[in-house]
Length: 125
Image 1 (cartoon, rainbow, N blue to C red):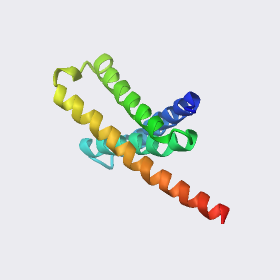
Image 2 (cartoon, one colour):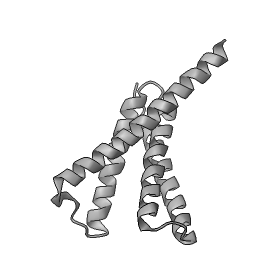
Image 3 (cartoon, rainbow, N blue to C red):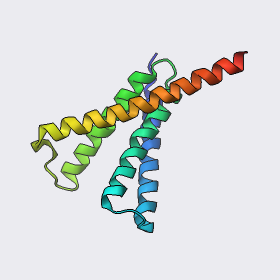
């Protein structure tokens, strides 16, 4: 059964990690703007790919998909409302962003599920 609270916890932890690490990267000024954006992207979607399967053991891929899609839509809304960037004027870029975020999260979730299954197999032997 899908656990909505697990999805909310995974998304909250992912957003918190993104804010903290992005703040530290910006404070230390170790990367250029593109590097900081790429690091924030990877932190957000890799962390949702790790945390969603941990807190939704029965439906890990659906939780990863919903978390990644929801975080992407929240990023779009934040860009429109706060930064006044007309995100939805280019549908191909929106499609590319949604695809990249979901694929990144799915690859991470697949690796995480494989690791968890192997660890559970070792615990039962």
